[in-house]
Amino acid sequence: MAGAICADRPRRGHGPAPGRLTLRAFAEIFRDPVLFYYAAIAFNLWMIVDAVRRRAELYWLFIILLVPFGGVIYFALVKVKDYGLGKRGAKAPRRGQLAQLKSQVDTTPSLANKLTLADALEENDQCDDATPLYRDALANDPDNKQALHGLARCAMSRQDFAEATELLDRLLRMDNAYRDYSAALDYAEALWGNGQHQDVIELLEGLTSVSRRMNHHMALAHYLVEDGRYDRARDVLEHALELYQSSPEHVQKRDKQWASRAKDLKNKLPPVVVESPQP
View 1: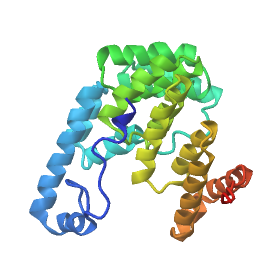
View 2: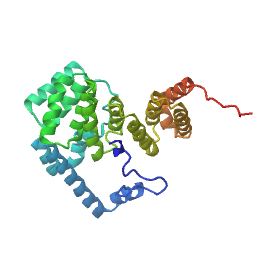
View 3: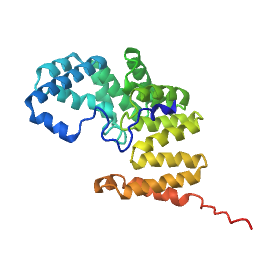
């Protein structure tokens, strides 16, 4: 359902979301040795649970338990991939890199290695090879978010929007912000391809209510235009550009291209029709 992205979203103006550390509270952990000790234990337990669920290589458990800052090492090299940092939008792996990843799977056929290879294949439009790897991962771990996302993208590549919608719905019910909301944008595309146009609008209206990102507002405006809702699209674009103008300099630098696209799309919209008063 499109409501997956909208459910339980934080409300504005009510302080930080429950369970989220403020910067001051985070700093206090480092000042207090006792708090730091318990935080480190909790973090390592989180990494151990993740490694077990992910069926990572056995040596990762030894690294987490025995190597100083082993949990941090595991997070940086393995867990961080769940958040898609640098994944989408980066250059697709070259043929030599794919061969190296395939060799790693042949040597150590762990779930983590298979999914890394599957993602690389999907990014290179080789979904025929990536799909069996994703399905194998889900057979062992039905809630594996990385596999759900990758398999959904492969389904979309062959225009199977029904399967993609089902997979992404499962994923977003577990984590509606997965990979910085890129899975939510994929879900919108799958829903649209499946003919669920109103669900797409509701999904992205929910997303833009909690996000200031230009690309999220552009996605909503794009589908509104496709649906012929030009006045609403204009409102969304104008609001997005207002947010852009009030954003910090580093955000404006990041979103400069999206702001340019928003202006272009706004200029291409049909002019507003002002009805003359009846005599």
